Image 1 (cartoon, one colour):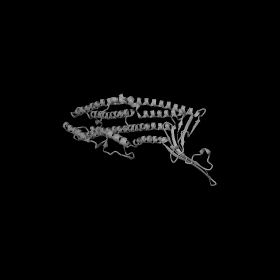
Image 2 (tube, helix red, strand yellow):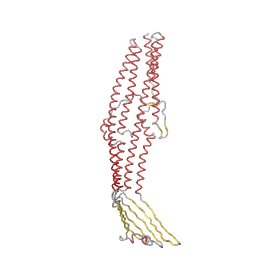
Image 3 (tube, rainbow, N blue to C red):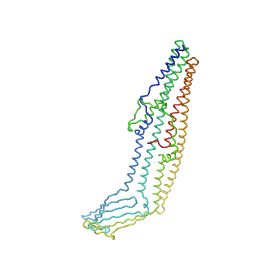
Image 4 (cartoon, rainbow, N blue to C red):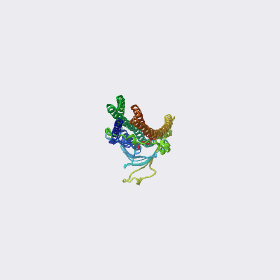
Length: 468
């Protein structure tokens, strides 16, 4: 009878090996998965638009420095008389230094022309400059808008990286949850197959009179319990697979579904990872270049430009205009040019109490202070989060390495109990007990492996290095 029992057990383990030897048709690695997410997910494509927004805003602000051609025509006719005709056409060229260059042609005529508009019959050419001597000398609204647009263009690049960093973090957590559910399912499938084959072997053994029928009841209960656990694992894997599909797209508008034969890698092929020394050594510089921290830097820079412009508005408005004028003779402007022919003007204005200007400057300073405090808080949060994730990364790596040995020890206990069972010195209860301990150890090892991978992912997210 012992020979029959031994043959049955050998048959059981051969069936287990055959059941677990099949390999998945397609393995979706973490690198392949994140590459697809970063290239095709709608949020990834939306993040790419951020830099386009910055470029468009910068282009729009440059329009304030475009040369402008214009003409002003005013004519009046009454009772058959041409009272006046005023024509002034020219070109204005604003510059970064606040000086505006201009030139043009003026032709005025009419029966009742205002004397100040008298010009020679051939018209009058003019060329000159307009210089702000007070407000607007060092910065004006156009230059402030352009500078803020340049800062915003840089900020959009940081926003793009921040969006990708967050997206890949959420996608990565979903992947490792899928990995964890799949490998748990493998453990429960193997456990259920083992229990089912053992039940069939014990049932045959009981029919041959080698074992009491009460053992078939205990083996049947194990099959039922493991069937329930297997159903739970299948449900968890199905839900994890559906959640993973949320991050799989084609060109940002076509959702994809995983094929049934697509699986994550087995936990045996995933090694525990520890913190790379270069990440720890570069932690301060990585935090300073973190996209979320850079966004606050750019906000402060924009507010400093605004503060500078508000401070400039405390000055009086003093604009000096000078135009050299010349009458064209035979189409030649320079032939009759003289430095004594010119037109100039000076304008001055200034609020007496400067309430609006002083309030605007005070608000700009308060916004800078507020944003700097927010930036300091954000940096402290990022540093604390990075330290916590690094600690978790190292701890889970040690746990995986330690528990891998523990799982092997549980397996050795199970194998030893099987040998005792084969020679009649153990019971089905002890076999089930050892086997449950080994199953729980496998599940724990899968959980720790996934936890270690998530800790590495969280560290990279905290340091802002997930985005390409």
